[in-house]
Length: 314
Image (cartoon, rainbow, N blue to C red):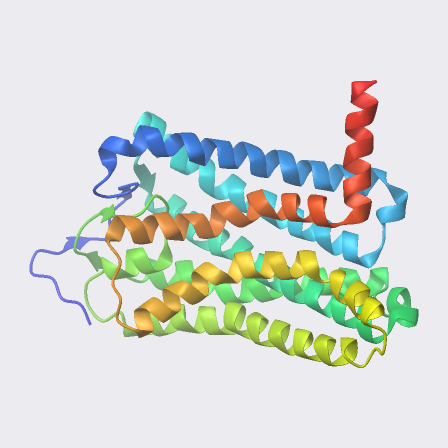
């Protein structure tokens, strides 16, 4: 419950604070944000182009990787330009409808990425448990259905967010203490009974990230069971090495979420500016690092990248 003595009606324009308390350092923050954006765009475009051109990479694992890169590219495209506008040009004002749009699309792509990581865990499960039926089980038809399911789940889960915020009639302030329109940040400055909004926010986490993480852990439990049934240690290592890149990406993606949830459960309160910086990293670091992980750890991708640089050198 939140109450206000001097509430304001639903504003036509919100003001994004950027990183509250560190406004004087916005120029410095813009440098790593811009470099991360360039690296993420370059890396993911490279991955998409290589998979599109290289016929030998038109197999389930790499098609799912292309899906991940497309989502990562979308995620940084709807977050970083707006942040850079705040840092470089002090463009903090955002219309109410534009705020609702951003509130829908940013978590949409985040939930989609979580869904793609679950699909990639299923891919590794099939590769380890049914190697001879791998391409038969993970047919192009099934991959299309998985992609549509990931998109449909994200849309269904996130559609209520702007609708619920649209129903909020009064606010404590029109300033959002974030560098983007975060759902909970807007709910926190609303007046009146916001219990339904808070419950919905928790349900989104459980129905998306929580659901996906549970089944990813289950998949890897079954993968470990299958790997340790292999008599040869060399064969075990080879089988499990195919999961290395995916495990790195999973750890990178879910670690900040788990850290934040545990911090709240244990009652640890971070400084507001530190919390906002970490929240921004949710959307920035994985899209930049994912192409590097797959480029460095996946033999086919590594060979193709080296071939491109070798050709350019000649």
